[in-house]
Image (tube, rainbow, N blue to C red; front, side, top):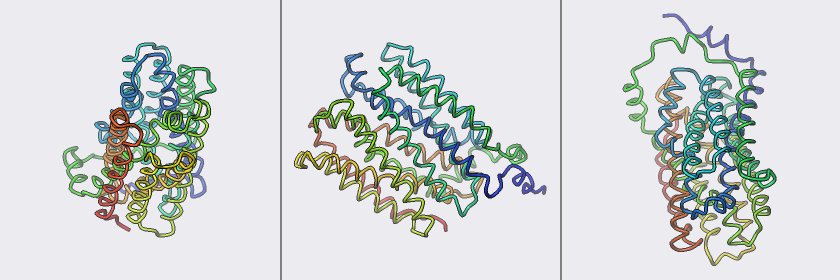
Length: 400
């Protein structure tokens, strides 16, 4: 049998040369995450322009990740077959084109349709990018690299929340997102080597066999469900955060955007902390269970009507800082749940489907709960998701 080791060595960067690729992949993730934050901060303006209810407008957010609920594994299959760098660039280009088209539209349903296309590009990005990092970064540095990578959501969403109100309108936000995503796609090949061609051309196992192996392993599925429970908590707080702060605390839209950006930014603290703790030997199960319950308690406090108004914003900061540990832990640990290395993209795709399931359900459930019983109603949703996350984390088994 012909060894693939020389091919791997030919395309792998030197020990000191992978960090530029890590930073470029991080920029690609940030550019992609801008498209989440741009919709969140634009909700008040979109509500004014289209005259829609908050529950109806929630599809501007939920349509974006909806495709990921069904497309995560499909994206993993494409990454496995076509190569991670190629798919990462393709995902960025899809997002850039859809965002540019959306900026020209003034029909609500057409705008939602472009958000579905953006979601297609985003799910490709978030499956391909971890596969690139897992291939390029040496094993002893992967926990730290994935901790850095997981900051892309906080950076991207926070940047949109901070600068969105300054751009002069939601269309300008869509255009800015398209330009930065296109730039990320053009820069990526400069530092990121492509997959080893001999490995991509070798005989691939049958799709049915690959999916069967992933599902029989069970641990990737448990990880996907933990990600769903996490996003039920996280997006219950973050999806309508500017609107919540305007109505609950009485902030203006500009101030709400600034405070929301700062709250999202502290998520980075948790991202990096998880990478450092994992590097020092803390068990992923411990981090996942502990993070879930602390998020649940602090998230419940945010929504309870008995919480003093002056404590709402500090609780939001605390919630978001702690929450950052969970996605970093999941992304760093998922490759270790794969039955074999060639199935890592499929495992990442499955986990991302769980991620998107929570992102889709949370805004819809939150808007329905708020419409039915006011802003105190989501407290039970957040606490219930936290308990589910703890139970799942205790059932998780991750190889050393």
